[in-house]
Image (cartoon, rainbow, N blue to C red; front, side, top):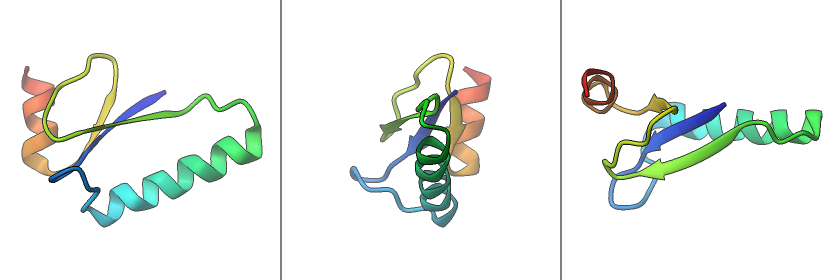
Length: 64
């Protein structure tokens, strides 16, 4: 699974995104298969990813 995490000026700003990153790190450490990946973006849309960010960011991703 790939997550597309919204950044603002290149930095993760949302607390839920930081929690997700910590959870992915733990999951990959625990399972040793590293089947979860993260892509950071200031706005570019990447296909086949689960968007995580503001309502506007996720809505734009789902509508396009």
